Structures are given as C-alpha cells and as structure tokens.
Image (tube, rainbow, N blue to C red):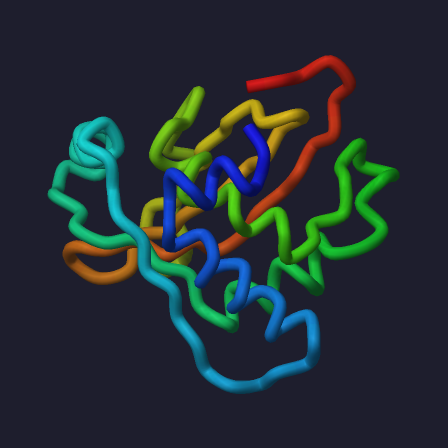
Length: 150
C-alpha cells in the first residue's frame, strides 16, 4: 500500500504527516493529531488493556522523539530511517495490524503495546496508554526487509 492509498483510506494521515513535517523543519509549536480506531483495534485494545479506548493521538513531542531516535543512522540496526512521509502509515499500521502485543509498562504503570504491519517492508508503531480512554503513539520504526509487502 502506498502513502497515497493510505491517505485516501485514512484522511487523518495528512494531518499526521503535516505534524511530522513541521517537526522536521524545526518547529517547536505544540501540535497534536488524533485518529480513529477501527472496530478490530477497539476489540484488540480492550483485550490487551482491559478497558475501552476511544482515541489515539500523536504529538509534536512524540514526532521529535521519532526524528531524534529513528530519523537517521538506523542502517546498523537493520532499519530504515524514518521520514515525515512514513508517518502516514501510522493509522494503517495500528488499525490493520498484523500483530499487537503488550510489551511492558513504563515507570508510571502505563502499558505499552507494539503494533506491527508489513507495508513494503516493516513499519512498527509503539503506543502507550495515556489517560483513561486514549493512547498516544510514542515511537515508530521502519524495518526495511526486501520482499516484504502488504
């Protein structure tokens, strides 16, 4: 699936990419992009977290983390550098995941989930529970594997 196809299916992808582009261009302005949950994702989150989640979001701070930690120099770890265009895949990866697993909790007890989806290589999105009915995207990896596809 291409970024254009994802944008057609998930209109919020454009706002997420715009948020990432502003961070890549040096903006320090606070921003947040929210996106919808598929019924399948709601069911999976209910099973993993034992609560209903109504919203997913990503902030400028999360995008800065992704840029700093995964925006360059990822090849030694078998990963591709993340670019703002990769952010378009976040709603697709989370809503149409190949796998979702509870991986651990942070020091405040917020549980983290790793969502994985094959998309012309692998894109990984990690989410952390934030508040009672929403989760936030905290990081994104792109593992470039030849021959992988949707």
